[in-house]
Each structure stands twice: as structure tokens, then as C-alpha cells.
Image (cartoon, rainbow, N blue to C red; front, side, top):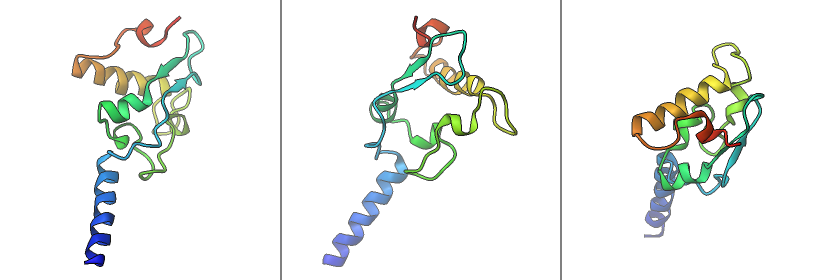
Length: 115
């Protein structure tokens, strides 16, 4: 019986981790300022997206294994590098595109780049 309980605990952790439900390490917010020189930085509500909206980590952090996700800026630099699009293009495509598709969330420049 004890072996079964341990096995079930391991399975539950694996299932929740793979499904993105384990987002305890998600920061409250992330300020994105590395690229933008003409507009104010963007404060991204990371924890809200991870927990309340149920967005799985891998949807945005598409490189790296669970728990060791890379930051956007690790691949997406100010300019296109190799196969990676620029950070600005990545954010506008992924973030703005999702907001347009879901018909909720900011889609205009000043909605994200607050003065």
C-alpha cells in the first residue's frame, strides 16, 4: 500500500508539472525593457497569465525543460539572431496575437507601453 501511495504521488507531480498547473515559481510580474528604446517598458503580469488564465509555461517558454525555462531575452535579442526573431517581433506576434485571437487583453501600443 505504501508503494502505491508513493507511486501515485510521483504520478500526480508529473501530471501537474507537465500540464503547467505547477506555477508556484512564477514571478508576480516581469518588466520587459531590454529592447524598447522609444517606448516605455512593458510590465507583464506573469503570475496572472500562468495561474489565473491557465496558460501553460511551454506556450511562451518554448525552449528549456519544465522548471528550467529560458527567459525570452535568452533567444530573442534586440535584433533577429539566427533562427530567433527579434524580441519586439516575438512579443507582438505571441502576446498581441493571443489577445486578438481571444478578444481580450491589450492590443494597442499604449495599452502595454504605459507612459
